Image 1 (cartoon, rainbow, N blue to C red):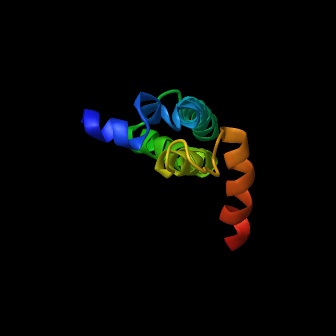
Image 2 (cartoon, one colour; image 1 turned 135 degrees about the horizontal axis):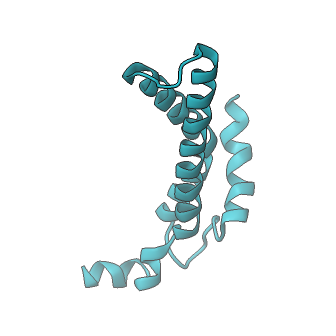
Image 3 (cartoon, one colour; image 1 turned 30 degrees about the horizontal axis):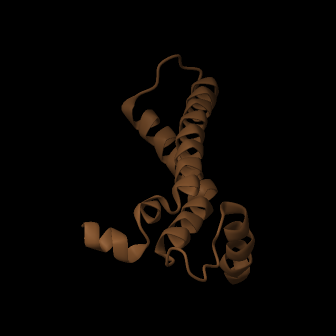
Length: 111
């Protein structure tokens, strides 16, 4: 393990991509729970019920998960690109802002 760490760029290489990882985790969990609560609230008000059943909770969780993946996936793409590049050397993704500027045009060109 120590040989691999030394070869790949030292201890700092282990933390490459940690900023987008932390940002992505915080945003994804926060948006998931926010959308889950909004979906439960809307569903209970539309159905005029105070308690929701298991299928209602499943539907709200599914909606929240889809929304979260759509919203937060670009952050995890940046995280993966930052982690896969060689540490030190000539790297395209030196920070989250630069990586965003380089990733978004190429990622969204397929739409």
